[in-house]
Length: 345
Image (cartoon, rainbow, N blue to C red; front, side):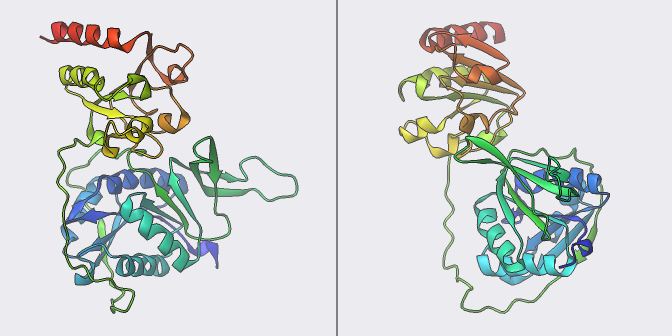
């Protein structure tokens, strides 16, 4: 492998039902930053059937080029044809970096593609940078420049690991939704569209989709919320979440929770914030009865304003909070809710 032959930052632009997933636009934004550091371009890889119209949206969010793989075999996500499509694009165009969203689809697709093209993959990254590797010079060892430094929680979130892939290309990472930010939209911006089809021959690895059943949920997506009122084990009971719901209603916010609450069966998994839940970035995040374990903080520390309410003044959540209230949430929340009602009336 001649590493010098690999150039450019490629992003897998996930779409479902001909609608781009939010993570696709987030990765285009981050890919643009990485490409700028490397003096190259960011290319979105758009795979599906009848999805050409989505290229303009990718361009408006920062893609310099869009490689379009459009074929009837790609109408629904299936592991084998999508793996063949993305690995063929990589083998043909030789990107230096490939980013994939750590969604249900991305977690299936990314490892299979990396194995097929014989490179490494760092999963569930929370930070991506261009830098030197080893990060700290080691006597007698060459320090390589312009490497993709991929940072992710490790050992159950108890430490943070920065990983590089210096000997193989492309450098691949899956990235958690909500961690990166979309670039500002430039309406009317266009990108070069390259049509590429490696050909698809169904074999015994192609599954047949007999029926698609779409789940209907009335649970709000906490990743879209501007204000989150989040509760942890310290809320005390499922019934006590009514206090959080009342506060959220006054503020026009959404209730979310920690893993302990989901494990207790008080709230559904869709509302979980944290390393094993969702990464959120609201304007205001209330952390109520949440101790502030690193696994939870990893999912909300980029919030604009963090307000913590906890009876334990030594709780780690106060270390990341912008404002903290030490006391009994059963007294504080009703008083806060009533005051806000009066102020916002």
